[in-house]
Image 1: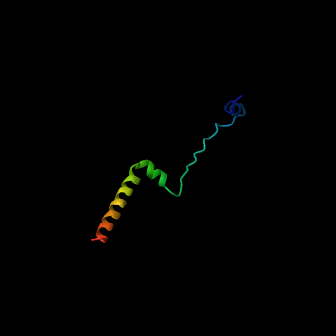
Image 2: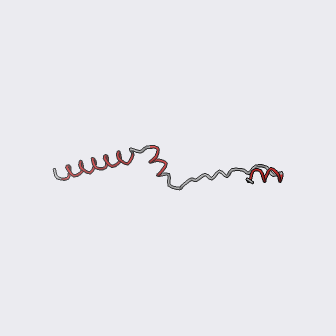
Image 3: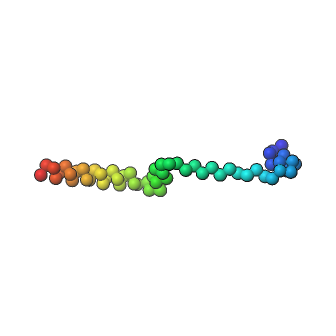
Amino acid sequence: MGEAKRREELGLPPREKKNENKTSKIKLNEILNKYPYLPLILGVSLLTILIIDLVNYYK
């Protein structure tokens, strides 16, 4: 016999579903899921800045 039938026979209301809001302190996974190309864009821009800085250093 399932829990729902047992609760109904006992006159109890249906069991409430627990809403577990899993909020992490670091929202990195949510950001990466929303913008999957963000690490690539940051990496290319950082590499470009480093190359420009290196070229200016040896002038």
